[in-house]
Length: 405
Image 1 (cartoon, rainbow, N blue to C red):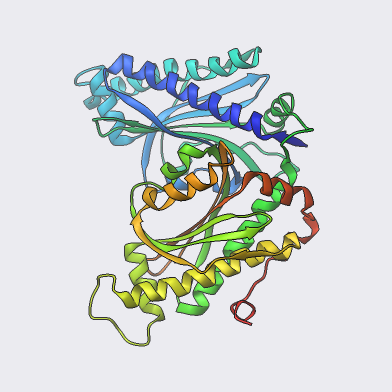
Image 2: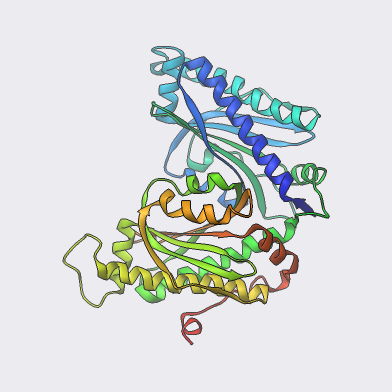
């Protein structure tokens, strides 16, 4: 089953415009200026859907929809943002639970009706939706269970992040369509003789990346003695201009390499500053007197970044049965968007959209977390997927000893 890049881009733009329409409706009702920050399509293991929401309480509304496409949509506000929004709509309403719930339902109904109707208008077909159901839950529990499919353990998720310009308000729109209804609708827009990608192999590539992340986590544990676990692995698709926004404005320390072969592109290993200090000191033979990042810390991060990158990229090469080389790691220490901006600009010389491969790892006992982001050349990724032998997907092992042979 193939889907072309153009239809992926069209569907991503459709979700983005739907989110803009929903945001405009809310802004009109509340008088608060807002903008859609990022919209992306993500292929993610079913169990990891909404992982990024953990640790936050949400309120919102949920809809079922059916017709040419079927699934569920959720509009979720963090609890503080919901209070701000209800106060803007009905002064004093946030202090009355019944009034607050009614306000969320009213705004949610108007916003999400516009969102779903926009899809139906574009597709020239009917998409009906249920009345809004009020929800109040924590973390990923605010989302419905991802649609089940006997043949697929991964699901497509449309996600938009919206931020108020001058208010402390953030909310998310998640659309979880049924797998077959989405892919069949995409296929009806696909040019299978052009830039089509095989979806089943994209899923296999995602699984392969998860194995590569587990290998990178194992290498971290071997080098530092810190028990490290691979967490979320996903492939997202978004306009190239939105790629830096996905990394955010937090400050990171890490490495960047350019990899060449099929596919080529860039790979980043990023630590928040506290994690960088923690993991670097675990590699040092003596304790450091300073909690600040020193040249010794940065040298250790550069070494670790090289080991993690090599394990990750070599795992790809083993499965793809190709040569994937990479440059020596370049140390970076800056805001996330500033690190990614020049890389996205380079990739954007040849493509309007990008696949972003994201992985995370953490440790349960120490204040430590790391992220791996890959930004491959779109055309070469398609070529790699076409040649991918799915039976080799588990052959990603690349040990530290192999890397330095």
